[in-house]
Length: 198
Image 1 (tube, rainbow, N blue to C red):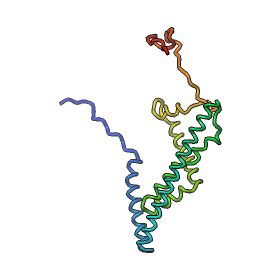
Image 2: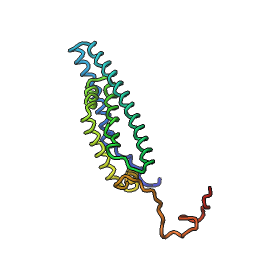
Image 3: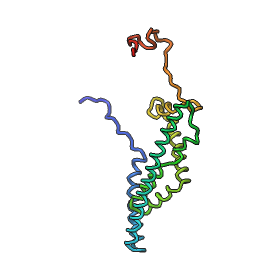
Image 4: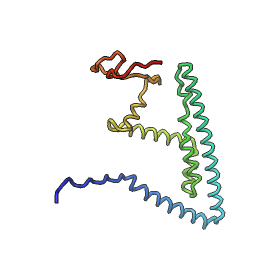
């Protein structure tokens, strides 16, 4: 019997992966309990009407948010094409697509479509523009904090580096040329590449 290296340890589960199933189970139990309380107080027909009304309102909100997202996407492409033709940079007022927070609007619609009173209340709360704006800013700050703390060489670090641009918003195309590399008549590189011909 040989003694080798100990078997590799399984990675520790994160707190979110441990608490998420418990939170979902508690949420489902609370939703069912609230529906039974409302059914006992107001009747089963009232609960059915609430659920159907929430589903219809949620579907309407998701449809409207989807249309607005496609309209914003089309407007963004048109602004980018116009800016490329004229050589100007769109102003912050022109790029207000991020302020619409369509993702949170769609999430609100999906929460309304889910059967349950707590999800309906959360969905209705997300229909308020000020709530969507505050949540969007908080999410942006959280993502930027996480990306700033990313170790060098990680995917998050690469994304952060890709977001770096000049203050005026222009992207500067470039090529890295090593000074210690041997010069080639064909440009930077090892000299093995033939010249490009039309």
